[in-house]
Image (cartoon, rainbow, N blue to C red; front, side, top):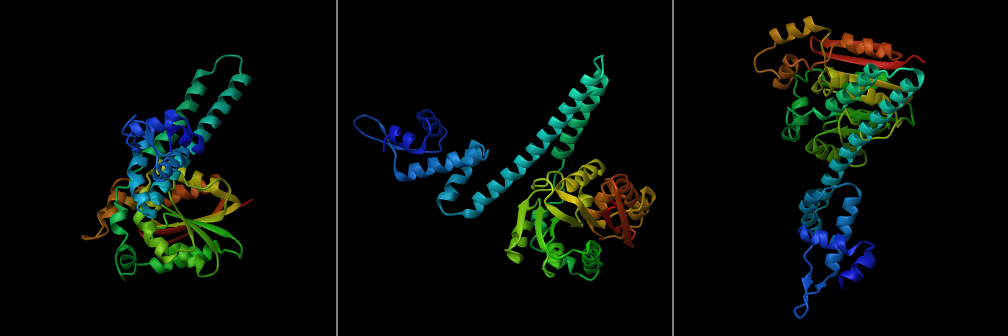
Length: 348
Protein backbone atom coordinates (compact mmCIF):
# COMPACT_ATOMS: atom_id res chain seq x y z
CA UNK A 1 0.00 0.00 0.00
CA UNK A 2 1.05 3.59 -0.63
CA UNK A 3 1.10 6.29 2.02
CA UNK A 4 -2.07 7.78 0.53
CA UNK A 5 -3.89 4.46 0.77
CA UNK A 6 -2.78 3.93 4.37
CA UNK A 7 -3.77 7.47 5.36
CA UNK A 8 -7.23 7.00 3.86
CA UNK A 9 -7.70 3.55 5.39
CA UNK A 10 -6.72 4.66 8.91
CA UNK A 11 -8.14 8.19 8.63
CA UNK A 12 -4.86 9.83 9.64
CA UNK A 13 -2.75 12.38 7.81
CA UNK A 14 0.29 11.58 5.72
CA UNK A 15 2.15 14.09 7.86
CA UNK A 16 1.43 11.98 10.97
CA UNK A 17 2.65 8.84 9.22
CA UNK A 18 5.89 10.54 8.22
CA UNK A 19 6.28 11.87 11.77
CA UNK A 20 6.00 8.36 13.24
CA UNK A 21 8.55 7.16 10.70
CA UNK A 22 10.97 9.94 11.69
CA UNK A 23 10.59 8.89 15.33
CA UNK A 24 11.48 5.30 14.48
CA UNK A 25 8.05 3.86 15.32
CA UNK A 26 7.53 2.46 11.82
CA UNK A 27 9.98 1.57 9.05
CA UNK A 28 8.13 1.04 5.74
CA UNK A 29 10.03 -0.35 2.78
CA UNK A 30 10.71 1.70 -0.33
CA UNK A 31 10.51 0.92 -4.00
CA UNK A 32 13.90 0.74 -5.66
CA UNK A 33 13.12 2.73 -8.81
CA UNK A 34 11.32 5.73 -7.25
CA UNK A 35 11.87 5.57 -3.47
CA UNK A 36 8.13 5.63 -2.69
CA UNK A 37 7.13 4.15 0.65
CA UNK A 38 5.46 0.75 0.55
CA UNK A 39 3.41 -0.24 3.60
CA UNK A 40 2.71 -3.84 4.58
CA UNK A 41 -0.18 -5.06 6.73
CA UNK A 42 2.28 -5.20 9.62
CA UNK A 43 3.07 -1.50 9.12
CA UNK A 44 -0.64 -0.76 9.12
CA UNK A 45 -1.04 -2.76 12.34
CA UNK A 46 1.74 -0.76 13.98
CA UNK A 47 0.16 2.51 12.91
CA UNK A 48 -3.20 1.40 14.30
CA UNK A 49 -1.52 0.51 17.58
CA UNK A 50 0.33 3.84 17.72
CA UNK A 51 -2.81 5.89 17.12
CA UNK A 52 -4.75 3.88 19.71
CA UNK A 53 -2.05 4.38 22.36
CA UNK A 54 -1.76 8.07 21.50
CA UNK A 55 -5.51 8.38 22.03
CA UNK A 56 -5.12 7.36 25.69
CA UNK A 57 -2.25 9.81 26.16
CA UNK A 58 0.76 7.49 26.00
CA UNK A 59 3.93 9.35 25.00
CA UNK A 60 6.03 8.47 21.96
CA UNK A 61 8.94 7.15 24.05
CA UNK A 62 6.63 4.79 25.94
CA UNK A 63 4.94 3.68 22.72
CA UNK A 64 8.33 2.92 21.20
CA UNK A 65 9.25 0.76 24.21
CA UNK A 66 6.03 -1.22 24.13
CA UNK A 67 5.53 -1.79 20.37
CA UNK A 68 7.93 -4.72 20.00
CA UNK A 69 6.62 -6.59 23.08
CA UNK A 70 3.06 -6.08 21.80
CA UNK A 71 4.07 -7.39 18.40
CA UNK A 72 5.56 -10.43 20.11
CA UNK A 73 2.25 -11.08 21.88
CA UNK A 74 3.40 -9.86 25.32
CA UNK A 75 0.09 -8.74 26.79
CA UNK A 76 1.62 -7.91 30.18
CA UNK A 77 3.84 -5.19 28.72
CA UNK A 78 0.89 -3.37 27.21
CA UNK A 79 -1.19 -3.90 30.34
CA UNK A 80 1.52 -2.37 32.54
CA UNK A 81 1.84 0.71 30.35
CA UNK A 82 -1.91 1.23 30.08
CA UNK A 83 -2.39 0.84 33.81
CA UNK A 84 0.36 3.35 34.49
CA UNK A 85 -1.19 5.76 31.99
CA UNK A 86 -4.61 5.39 33.58
CA UNK A 87 -3.10 6.22 36.97
CA UNK A 88 -1.41 9.32 35.53
CA UNK A 89 -4.66 10.44 33.88
CA UNK A 90 -6.62 10.09 37.12
CA UNK A 91 -4.05 12.28 38.87
CA UNK A 92 -4.37 14.86 36.11
CA UNK A 93 -8.17 14.69 36.26
CA UNK A 94 -8.17 15.29 40.00
CA UNK A 95 -5.79 18.21 39.56
CA UNK A 96 -8.11 19.74 36.95
CA UNK A 97 -11.05 19.28 39.32
CA UNK A 98 -9.14 21.10 42.04
CA UNK A 99 -8.21 23.93 39.66
CA UNK A 100 -11.82 24.27 38.49
CA UNK A 101 -13.00 24.39 42.11
CA UNK A 102 -10.42 27.08 42.93
CA UNK A 103 -11.44 29.11 39.87
CA UNK A 104 -15.12 28.87 40.84
CA UNK A 105 -14.33 30.10 44.35
CA UNK A 106 -12.26 32.98 42.98
CA UNK A 107 -15.12 34.01 40.67
CA UNK A 108 -17.54 33.87 43.60
CA UNK A 109 -15.29 36.06 45.76
CA UNK A 110 -14.80 38.62 42.99
CA UNK A 111 -18.54 38.88 42.38
CA UNK A 112 -19.32 39.40 46.05
CA UNK A 113 -16.71 42.04 46.87
CA UNK A 114 -16.25 45.51 45.42
CA UNK A 115 -12.47 45.61 45.82
CA UNK A 116 -10.01 43.13 44.36
CA UNK A 117 -9.41 40.63 47.22
CA UNK A 118 -5.94 39.52 46.15
CA UNK A 119 -5.05 37.98 49.50
CA UNK A 120 -8.03 35.61 49.42
CA UNK A 121 -7.31 34.67 45.81
CA UNK A 122 -3.68 34.06 46.73
CA UNK A 123 -4.75 31.70 49.54
CA UNK A 124 -6.91 29.69 47.13
CA UNK A 125 -4.06 29.45 44.65
CA UNK A 126 -1.66 28.35 47.38
CA UNK A 127 -4.12 25.68 48.54
CA UNK A 128 -4.41 24.32 45.01
CA UNK A 129 -0.61 24.27 44.63
CA UNK A 130 -0.16 22.51 47.97
CA UNK A 131 -2.57 19.72 46.99
CA UNK A 132 -0.76 19.24 43.70
CA UNK A 133 2.57 18.95 45.51
CA UNK A 134 1.17 16.45 48.03
CA UNK A 135 0.10 14.18 45.19
CA UNK A 136 3.31 14.49 43.24
CA UNK A 137 5.73 14.20 46.17
CA UNK A 138 4.75 10.71 47.30
CA UNK A 139 7.22 7.97 46.43
CA UNK A 140 7.63 4.33 47.34
CA UNK A 141 10.47 4.45 49.85
CA UNK A 142 9.92 0.83 50.86
CA UNK A 143 10.37 -0.89 47.46
CA UNK A 144 7.22 -2.99 47.68
CA UNK A 145 7.86 -4.67 44.34
CA UNK A 146 10.79 -6.49 45.94
CA UNK A 147 8.65 -7.58 48.91
CA UNK A 148 5.72 -8.98 46.95
CA UNK A 149 6.90 -12.58 46.49
CA UNK A 150 7.48 -13.12 50.22
CA UNK A 151 4.66 -10.96 51.55
CA UNK A 152 2.14 -13.70 52.36
CA UNK A 153 4.79 -15.75 54.13
CA UNK A 154 5.85 -12.76 56.23
CA UNK A 155 2.35 -11.86 57.39
CA UNK A 156 1.73 -15.41 58.53
CA UNK A 157 4.67 -15.48 60.91
CA UNK A 158 3.60 -15.81 64.53
CA UNK A 159 5.63 -12.81 65.73
CA UNK A 160 6.99 -9.54 64.45
CA UNK A 161 5.14 -6.62 62.90
CA UNK A 162 2.22 -8.80 61.72
CA UNK A 163 1.69 -10.55 65.04
CA UNK A 164 -2.06 -9.74 65.16
CA UNK A 165 -2.59 -9.95 61.42
CA UNK A 166 -5.58 -12.30 61.27
CA UNK A 167 -7.28 -10.49 64.16
CA UNK A 168 -6.87 -7.19 62.31
CA UNK A 169 -8.48 -8.52 59.13
CA UNK A 170 -11.31 -10.14 61.06
CA UNK A 171 -12.00 -6.98 63.06
CA UNK A 172 -12.10 -4.82 59.95
CA UNK A 173 -14.58 -7.20 58.36
CA UNK A 174 -16.85 -7.29 61.42
CA UNK A 175 -16.79 -3.55 61.96
CA UNK A 176 -17.63 -2.77 58.34
CA UNK A 177 -20.45 -5.32 58.63
CA UNK A 178 -21.03 -5.58 54.87
CA UNK A 179 -24.45 -6.38 53.47
CA UNK A 180 -25.28 -8.58 50.50
CA UNK A 181 -25.05 -6.57 47.29
CA UNK A 182 -22.62 -3.99 48.66
CA UNK A 183 -19.39 -3.17 46.83
CA UNK A 184 -16.17 -2.36 48.68
CA UNK A 185 -12.70 -1.04 47.91
CA UNK A 186 -9.42 -2.23 49.46
CA UNK A 187 -6.76 0.49 49.11
CA UNK A 188 -3.12 -0.55 49.35
CA UNK A 189 -4.36 -4.11 48.96
CA UNK A 190 -0.94 -5.75 48.61
CA UNK A 191 -1.58 -9.39 47.75
CA UNK A 192 -5.26 -9.04 48.64
CA UNK A 193 -5.62 -10.65 52.04
CA UNK A 194 -8.07 -8.08 53.40
CA UNK A 195 -10.11 -8.03 50.20
CA UNK A 196 -10.12 -11.83 50.29
CA UNK A 197 -11.68 -11.81 53.77
CA UNK A 198 -14.71 -10.02 52.31
CA UNK A 199 -14.80 -12.14 49.16
CA UNK A 200 -15.06 -15.33 51.23
CA UNK A 201 -18.39 -14.02 52.51
CA UNK A 202 -19.68 -13.24 49.02
CA UNK A 203 -19.04 -9.48 49.16
CA UNK A 204 -18.03 -7.74 45.95
CA UNK A 205 -14.63 -6.06 46.15
CA UNK A 206 -12.23 -4.03 44.03
CA UNK A 207 -8.63 -3.31 44.93
CA UNK A 208 -5.95 -0.67 44.37
CA UNK A 209 -2.20 -0.83 44.94
CA UNK A 210 0.78 1.18 43.72
CA UNK A 211 3.04 -1.89 43.35
CA UNK A 212 2.85 -3.84 40.09
CA UNK A 213 4.39 -6.91 41.70
CA UNK A 214 1.93 -6.88 44.59
CA UNK A 215 -0.90 -6.67 42.07
CA UNK A 216 0.63 -9.54 40.13
CA UNK A 217 0.42 -11.71 43.26
CA UNK A 218 -3.10 -10.41 43.94
CA UNK A 219 -4.29 -11.37 40.45
CA UNK A 220 -2.97 -14.90 40.78
CA UNK A 221 -4.96 -15.33 44.00
CA UNK A 222 -8.09 -13.45 42.91
CA UNK A 223 -8.25 -13.42 39.10
CA UNK A 224 -11.98 -12.68 39.20
CA UNK A 225 -11.60 -9.41 41.13
CA UNK A 226 -11.01 -6.01 39.60
CA UNK A 227 -7.68 -4.49 40.62
CA UNK A 228 -6.05 -1.26 39.52
CA UNK A 229 -2.65 0.36 39.74
CA UNK A 230 -2.97 3.49 41.89
CA UNK A 231 -2.64 4.93 45.37
CA UNK A 232 -4.47 6.79 48.14
CA UNK A 233 -3.80 10.21 46.63
CA UNK A 234 -5.41 9.55 43.26
CA UNK A 235 -7.77 6.60 43.59
CA UNK A 236 -8.44 5.42 40.01
CA UNK A 237 -12.24 5.39 40.26
CA UNK A 238 -14.93 7.92 39.54
CA UNK A 239 -16.95 9.54 42.32
CA UNK A 240 -19.39 7.65 44.56
CA UNK A 241 -18.66 4.08 43.46
CA UNK A 242 -18.36 2.17 46.74
CA UNK A 243 -20.39 1.36 49.84
CA UNK A 244 -17.27 1.11 51.99
CA UNK A 245 -13.50 1.42 51.83
CA UNK A 246 -10.93 -0.47 53.87
CA UNK A 247 -7.16 -0.51 54.19
CA UNK A 248 -4.66 -2.41 56.29
CA UNK A 249 -0.96 -1.75 56.95
CA UNK A 250 -0.78 0.91 54.23
CA UNK A 251 -1.93 4.29 55.52
CA UNK A 252 1.31 4.90 57.43
CA UNK A 253 3.21 5.23 54.14
CA UNK A 254 1.75 8.73 53.75
CA UNK A 255 2.91 11.82 55.58
CA UNK A 256 0.46 13.88 57.64
CA UNK A 257 -0.60 16.18 54.81
CA UNK A 258 -1.01 13.28 52.40
CA UNK A 259 -3.10 11.40 54.95
CA UNK A 260 -5.65 14.22 55.04
CA UNK A 261 -5.73 14.34 51.25
CA UNK A 262 -6.16 10.53 51.18
CA UNK A 263 -9.17 10.76 53.48
CA UNK A 264 -10.77 13.26 51.10
CA UNK A 265 -10.03 10.93 48.19
CA UNK A 266 -11.64 8.02 50.02
CA UNK A 267 -14.73 10.12 50.68
CA UNK A 268 -14.85 11.06 47.00
CA UNK A 269 -15.19 7.47 45.80
CA UNK A 270 -17.69 6.50 48.52
CA UNK A 271 -21.45 6.71 48.27
CA UNK A 272 -23.06 9.26 50.64
CA UNK A 273 -23.33 6.81 53.56
CA UNK A 274 -20.10 4.96 52.85
CA UNK A 275 -18.07 3.58 55.76
CA UNK A 276 -14.31 3.70 56.23
CA UNK A 277 -12.07 1.35 58.21
CA UNK A 278 -8.32 1.81 58.54
CA UNK A 279 -6.07 -0.67 60.32
CA UNK A 280 -2.35 -0.91 60.86
CA UNK A 281 0.47 1.14 62.30
CA UNK A 282 -0.87 4.13 64.25
CA UNK A 283 -0.01 5.84 67.51
CA UNK A 284 -2.26 7.66 69.94
CA UNK A 285 -0.26 10.93 69.94
CA UNK A 286 3.26 12.39 69.71
CA UNK A 287 4.27 11.00 73.08
CA UNK A 288 3.21 7.50 72.07
CA UNK A 289 5.26 7.82 68.89
CA UNK A 290 8.37 8.83 70.85
CA UNK A 291 7.90 5.88 73.21
CA UNK A 292 7.54 3.52 70.28
CA UNK A 293 10.77 4.77 68.73
CA UNK A 294 12.69 4.49 72.01
CA UNK A 295 11.44 1.02 72.87
CA UNK A 296 11.56 -0.51 69.40
CA UNK A 297 13.32 -3.88 69.64
CA UNK A 298 16.42 -4.58 67.62
CA UNK A 299 15.78 -6.44 64.42
CA UNK A 300 12.23 -5.10 64.20
CA UNK A 301 10.38 -3.89 61.17
CA UNK A 302 12.70 -1.35 59.49
CA UNK A 303 9.81 0.10 57.50
CA UNK A 304 7.85 0.80 60.67
CA UNK A 305 10.85 2.39 62.39
CA UNK A 306 11.47 4.60 59.39
CA UNK A 307 7.81 5.65 59.35
CA UNK A 308 7.87 6.38 63.10
CA UNK A 309 11.05 8.44 62.92
CA UNK A 310 9.86 10.28 59.83
CA UNK A 311 6.55 11.22 61.40
CA UNK A 312 4.56 9.17 58.90
CA UNK A 313 2.67 6.93 61.31
CA UNK A 314 -0.79 8.50 61.72
CA UNK A 315 -2.09 9.62 65.07
CA UNK A 316 -5.40 8.10 66.11
CA UNK A 317 -6.45 11.28 67.90
CA UNK A 318 -6.01 13.36 64.74
CA UNK A 319 -7.85 10.83 62.58
CA UNK A 320 -10.72 10.75 65.07
CA UNK A 321 -10.91 14.53 65.08
CA UNK A 322 -10.99 14.63 61.27
CA UNK A 323 -13.75 12.02 61.08
CA UNK A 324 -15.85 13.80 63.69
CA UNK A 325 -15.40 17.13 61.93
CA UNK A 326 -16.68 15.55 58.71
CA UNK A 327 -19.77 13.97 60.22
CA UNK A 328 -18.60 10.48 61.19
CA UNK A 329 -18.95 8.47 64.36
CA UNK A 330 -15.82 6.43 65.11
CA UNK A 331 -14.80 3.43 67.13
CA UNK A 332 -11.27 2.28 67.79
CA UNK A 333 -9.32 -0.71 68.95
CA UNK A 334 -5.73 -0.74 70.17
CA UNK A 335 -3.79 -3.97 69.76
CA UNK A 336 -0.35 -2.62 70.70
CA UNK A 337 1.46 0.70 71.13
CA UNK A 338 1.73 1.03 67.35
CA UNK A 339 -1.17 -1.07 66.05
CA UNK A 340 -4.70 0.33 65.95
CA UNK A 341 -7.96 -0.04 64.07
CA UNK A 342 -10.32 2.87 63.50
CA UNK A 343 -13.70 2.62 61.82
CA UNK A 344 -15.85 5.59 60.76
CA UNK A 345 -19.57 5.54 60.00
CA UNK A 346 -21.49 8.63 58.81
CA UNK A 347 -23.87 10.01 61.45
CA UNK A 348 -26.29 11.41 58.88
